[in-house]
Amino acid sequence: MKRTAFFVICFILVSISVSVVLVACQGRQDDNAPAFAMIAQSRMHLAAQDYEAARNSILGMRKKYPAAIQARAAGLLLLDSIELAAARDSLDNAEGAERERLSLKYRFFERKLQEDLKKEILRQ
Image (cartoon, rainbow, N blue to C red):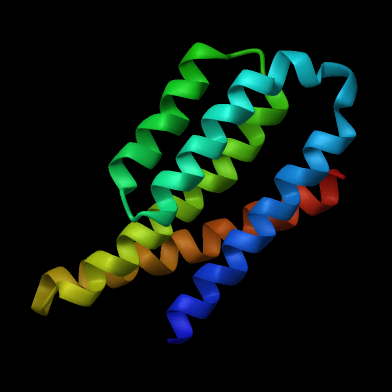
């Protein structure tokens, strides 16, 4: 329950960050619009717990739209959320040494997401 609440809070914070970025860069919104559409698609995959498709959508956006800087920044935050959710789900089913490895991975992405969110807030 505690992990789910944390995930929901992270997802809300990422969504707010993306919204702020969209508003802040309206002059370049046309350049970033298709990239942000791919981010929205990635969010739908994340909500359906299809982590590989969500990850592939972000990675594809980064390759296809290398000049969409704002979208790429938002994509990095979302990618952290995807990795965190995937690690959490894997951790629930693991035992022994694998559980310890996944626990470290989960804590790493949890801290990374927090730091990336701090950087995003300071940048604005």
